[in-house]
Image 1 (cartoon, helix red, strand yellow):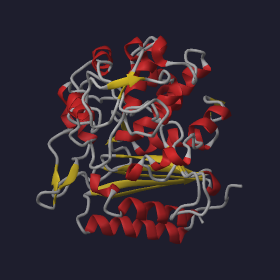
Image 2: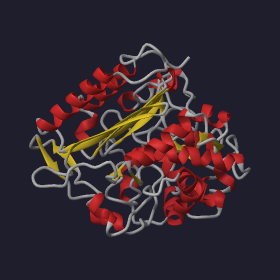
Image 3: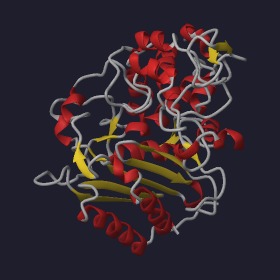
Length: 400
């Protein structure tokens, strides 16, 4: 049963002080945090858009939310299922003939022409659960220089980081991707990111409209998410902060030239369902609360309770969770988002769900505590320097 009552004033103060201290230490120039429970919404704007002379962070700041795109795409997919345009168990071949009759590498580090037949087709649910048989590799390093990894890079498919962007429009992208064999058998293991890229193409074809239109008409407009999309106006780019990440060669936190604000003023060739959206604190809160409320938005049902349950319930076996390595935290995966399948270091109660974005964004809902928590920065280090973990722990503590 969800915890009720107001958020702890002391807990909110501790969270603010901890995040403000990180900004004061120069770990990031600024961020916006949101904690929400029931009718209570606490938004905290800390720091600035960049180091030095820069505008202060604002509630309507536009953030590159990166992989927080994934749960939004997953929710849109469930809307198409409800409309009868997709079925979770169906092979993707009907709409993606480029992926019919898959071949699978005989060994992950082997040549591309040493393959075996796939045991079964890729299904829609395989894309949602990242069990399609293709995705990021984490061993022995991230994306080791295997022939399959080099081939994808040569095709400029942009299967990992969102920048640099792929130059290929969706139909050309899926055609090129279809020339590659799968890495593993469908359903065998969890692999990050590529499932959402493919799913974005599938959803657009199922709906008979570009992906940005599908998301806008089915989610963003009904929810009033007016600032969320794959691009913004030229004027809107002034609301996008600078992007920072540590240069591991120098150990210094540096502004990144890729993903400059001006690149977001025109529609991308390939709208990435894996990491291509801009959004604001209030827009993403609206989406998060749609899930927290079981599919209801202001009393109107947008998603069925069953759809929300499928989105936010772990679908991985223990063996599949083990294949995820360091990428999956907490240890479990629903549709487009992580799910705490059991107790972990941050909470003795399972069921917390959400995800992070590589530009330094984080979100989770905790049904047990009736809590939605969002942290939006544009500093990748936020995810691995302890700040994200501290944010999660202090947000949970503020909820009691």
